[in-house]
Structure formats: structure tokens, C-alpha cells
Length: 192
Image (cartoon, rainbow, N blue to C red; front, side, top):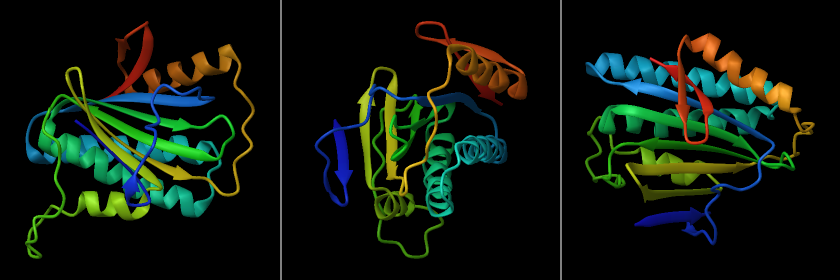
């Protein structure tokens, strides 16, 4: 099942695997108590904000991205648990930024349950309200939730060299203290 929305309407395409000049990934260990999972989500949100700030995103986009990251990462850590993969992507033209979270659960989240006194259940409403495009898809081993924002004016980011890309990955690894390999040997930072 794939769900995708663009301004409240079904999106025509889902940003996945497109050519990107900036992509950063990290892994989040979401296990233990509710408090430990919340702390892991908190650290991951801060890392996403740090990356986006480094790209020079305008303040309104940065604020919306932080809220989207908070909702999507928190949902994954609190409801799915296990190893959560987070990606943040800046489009080649610097005119769009996306956050994606993969978790091991096949359960597709549902929107608000109607209980106004409930402690949770409004996250997808925030995602829908803030994101220019968003979606949910089952993938092998779990699901992928993503949200994309337009960046106006676009940020002017030069294409990084191979050395710069490797340095960024190593910086993530050093900052988090662990190295994980996924797929074709792409390194991921781990936030435990």
C-alpha cells in the first residue's frame, strides 16, 4: 500500500531514488523504555536540524522541517521501535528538501482518532498541514514515511566533491560513535 499526498491531493510521484546533490542518513536505535525511545528521537531530530541548518535553508523552511522530522521520527521510535533509518535530502536545484523515515513495522499509521483529549494521534494532521508533499509506503522489511517541503528561494549549494561526501559520512560516524553499512556499503551514522 502506498499513500502519497500533494497539498491534500494524491501526489503524482513519490520522491525516491531521484538524483540528489545532498543526502545524509542516520540510524536510530529505538529500543528500551518509552523514555529511552523519546531520547533517541530527540537526538535524531537535533541531528536533522543540524544538517538542514548547515545547508542554509531559510528559517520558515527550517522550522517546518524540524516539526515534520519531530513527528515522523517520534512516530517511528514510539510505535515501531527497533532500528529506524532517517534520511534528509536536498534536491539538486536546492528548491526542495525531504525527510524520510524507514522503520521495521508494516503497520500504516492512521490519522486522528477523534478523541480531542488523547495524548497522541495528531501527528499526521501536522504532516499533512505542513508538507507540500508526503506519503507512506510499505517497503521490504517495514514502511517508509516521507515529507517534502519546497524551498523558496532555493538554496545555492555547490555539488560536493567525492571527498566532501565521504567527509560528511565520516563526520556522522565520528559524532555518533558507531558505523553501520547499508546496501552498497553506504555508511550511516547511528544515534543510540
